[in-house]
Length: 379
Image (tube, rainbow, N blue to C red; front, side, top):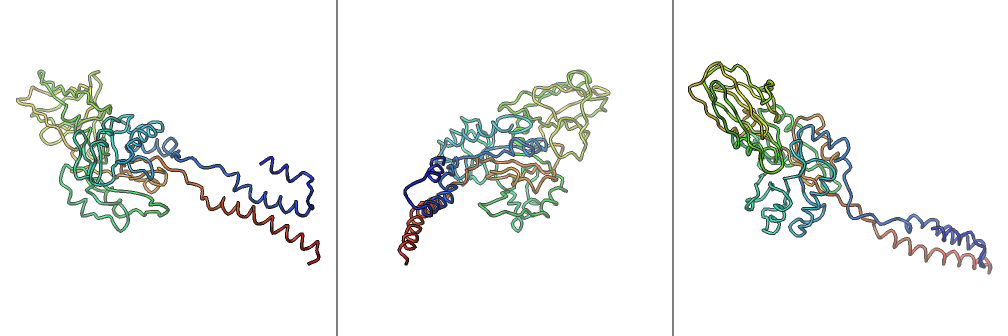
């Protein structure tokens, strides 16, 4: 750029008017000729800044969807690449750092792709697959879409009891903004549902199954084993007995928190239900239930849903390249989301502009020179 401007300032052996013409053209074209080529991949700064931490606090999960515009099954390198990108920006959940959920378009996963998913630490795949490969767990889309004009409340209502309702959401398709169905959102917010995510749902079941108890006198000791997978998600148990409760305590002797019947997001604690209690505890903990007398019998059964809710629900944000755009319509909503993050692509330069610029660079000076020569000859 400096050399071009220098040439324009030199006294050369051409008429001053012609020099000015050349210089004006060059100065007009500098923005095109000096524009840097954009990088191939960008980043979503909202993952690190305000939106990401707020969504984690809300109970959301961040999983992966690969790289924007790249087919994962044909480019397995994006699996580990997306994981690294996500972990450099945020934790996957309030329960764990590394992502365990991955979105795979289509209905099948080849063995090589499934092997790479497992090697990268992913345990859950979804959401339109016919079946999950060995070693992976399928999260199936069974609640339709949250898009306005597409959402169908009857799909939510017909869901089987103790099941996860997984609903599709995408805020943008190319430059088109997708509108959410406010009526469907309002309906979901007023139902007897546990707001959860893919990873939380799966890991809660694992923790619930890994809980055991022993009866020591008039005390019930409930112990939850440490779960595999790196996430410390609490599990819920229904403990049945026929005695009054004196108190519930952790291993340090502190009172264990009581859970409200209205609580819709996973938390540790207990509450009385018919025939016993629902107890939700973190892996690796021992909770003591003190009774007024030694019961005749005690039994434990893993609970599928948290806090006795009929069903669980998650909204799955597909192809999330801009967390602000994908989540802006839900800032006041208590619903929780499973965000499938894609590393966004940078906008590529439109090479027609430089081509036009070069053509102009050649043509305009020639035209200027001809005009000047015509003026000299008196035409």
